[in-house]
Length: 227
Image (cartoon, rainbow, N blue to C red; front, side, top):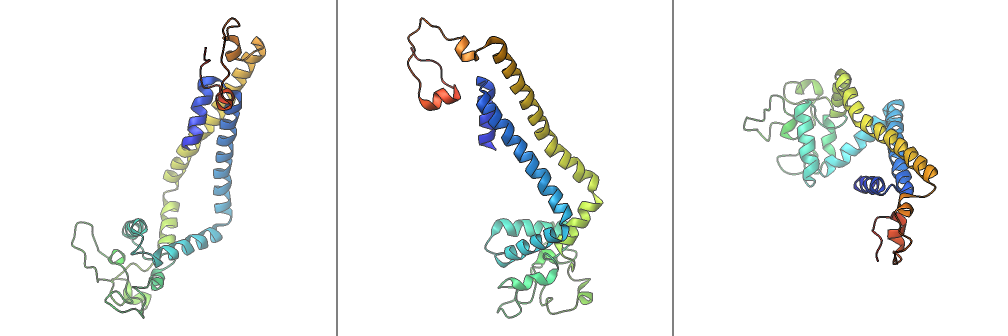
C-alpha cells in the first residue's frame, strides 16, 4: 500500500497521466478483489470454515513456538469463551497436549480454555488437566467445549450491524479514492486537450539550454529541468 500511495502522491503532484491511471487501476483492482473475496466467502461458507479450521490446527501444532499465534489464540479463547478451532479436541494435534505425550500437559488444554479464568486472577495453568479423553458433558463446568470458529461466527451474526459499519468504513474510502482519481484524470485530460500541451511543456523556455534527464526522471516527470 505504501507503493500505491507513493504513486498516487507523485502522480497528483506532477499531473502525470500515466501514473494517475496506474493509481486508479490499482485501487479499482484492490476494491474489486475485496468485494469478490467477500462474496465468495459468503457463497462458500462451509469451505471457508473448513479452511479456517485447517489453518487454526496448523497454528495449534506450533502453539508454543509461535508467540504471535499463541497470544491471538489465548485472547480469542478468553474473549469468546471457546477452545480450539472446530472443537476442544483440536488440541490433540499439539505435541505437548497429545494424550501420548509425557509431562503434565498431556491430554490437557491451555488454561485459557478453562471456565471462570479471569485476567486479573492468578491462573491455574493446569486447570485443563486430562480433559481430552473425557466426554463433552463432563466438561461443561471445567472448560469451554465449543470451538472458536463457531463462537466467532455466532458473535459476527449477533453483531452484524457493527460488522456492516466496519466493512462500510473500510470500503467507502477506497470507493471515494477511485471516484476522485477518475475525476482528476478527466480534469487533467481536459486541460491537456484545451492547451494542446502538458504542463511541463507549457512552462518550458525555448531560450534555455536544458540538459537531458534520465529515463526514470523523464518518465515520471518528477525532477526539475537542469540548465
